[in-house]
Image (cartoon, rainbow, N blue to C red; front, side, top):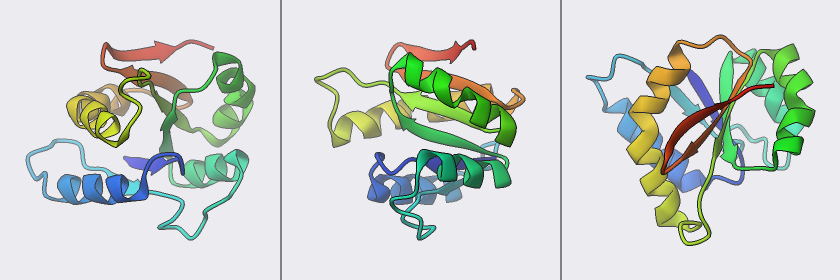
Length: 135
């Protein structure tokens, strides 16, 4: 499984998670993590990032956006067969450690949930759980 993190997710965090994942030999689901900075693709449009994820049969991970915004991109998710996951943090959690705790606490569960779904799909991850968006 391929995950492309959005630029709004800290690059160093993605690098750290990639190192943890690389050492996670007992996980039944192997993943590759990427970030626009590691691809030399910083500043690319959302549409370009969706195309990159699609070429890699991937899932984009980004911060929560307004549902109207999510719906407006659904034709592109569908065209490129891309999954998307939105991280939702409360105002108090909207800091680096809030990101770390949310992703680490939900990571294995998220991989299991996404592994069984055909793309396109959209999910939201919060401290309350993993919720699928229906289009």
